[in-house]
Image (cartoon, rainbow, N blue to C red; front, side):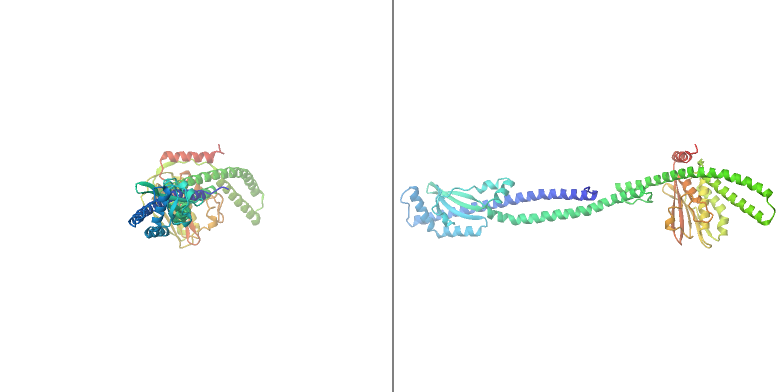
Length: 506
């Protein structure tokens, strides 16, 4: 199963945190084990010293009572010591209390040098020979794995011993036995707590990783969706990630690439449309010419009655209309030879306003012009920009009811000169907004659907673009952006556009 980037990110972060938790838990466990064992060993050594002192006190009390061993034989010395220890209430009370109080001590035993038990907290060991047990000190200094294996394996007893003398002779040992099960009981609460913390940390890290991945990868998902929209032919006007970091820069560049692709796509579409319509228009031209010739013949042979003459006039009008449409199609498919020159766009817009003003006044509309914003001279084809603006003004005039308003503004936005034509007309339905720049699409009776297609074409030939924002019942706003580019850049783009549009002509 293929995992998504978000899942991979979450898993990687969770595993990384889990690895850190495992390492920290292992360190904590090692410290806890070593500390508990060391405390148990130190406590056993302290108790052994207490018992040692109590044994010495018991032997001194026996001596004060006049008791002494019958001989220096090991058996007599053992009987003497056993009798002294049995009669010492202090020693017996100390052994009983130490075993009861200490949580890790399993037994306390006093034995002679041969291992025979003289006194023990475990009465069943009395007078028996007990073998030595593993020293707890060896476990204290062992590895973590050894400590875990010993303490959590089968129960066994360790001991901490202290040798003592009877007079000047080594006599025996004080053995403090410690049970691995009891030591494990001391360690287990800390381990359980650590396990809870580790589990909680792992779960929390997974949750945080999920949240962080959502936050961190959201811009990438937005950029991916942005690329999908470009692939589907829908181009974003502004970056989907408005941030100052690398992702924001990528989104901005994608918008720029999308604009370029939109321009190339539109040019290719127009080139294809031009190829198709050019052939159609030329095929229509010849029959129309023949129809005109035969119409002239009919005019000389038809009677002068009103009905025949009316029919001839109707045929003449319709043939002329078809001929005009064909000429318009042919002119649209021809490659455009840009005549670029440094131009003050205000003069171009003023010319368009002068031509459109009579139509605007006749329609009963108010015209507002604003060229106050300083805009550098721009390298453009004056005639194409003039046609674009005039077409937008006349369109606004046709689709705005009497008493409405049309505004024309010129301003600078970054490295672009921006021409805005806005009206308070009927607006464009949402389903038509993506079609208005397509060739032959029109909603106006008698329209050809070429005007806005030409406007889009002219803007793209200048490395610019045209945008439309409209709301039904409130009006429409067209925004023509022309870059303040270097001549070399415009010439290069124009040549590329001419090659695309004129390939079939050549």
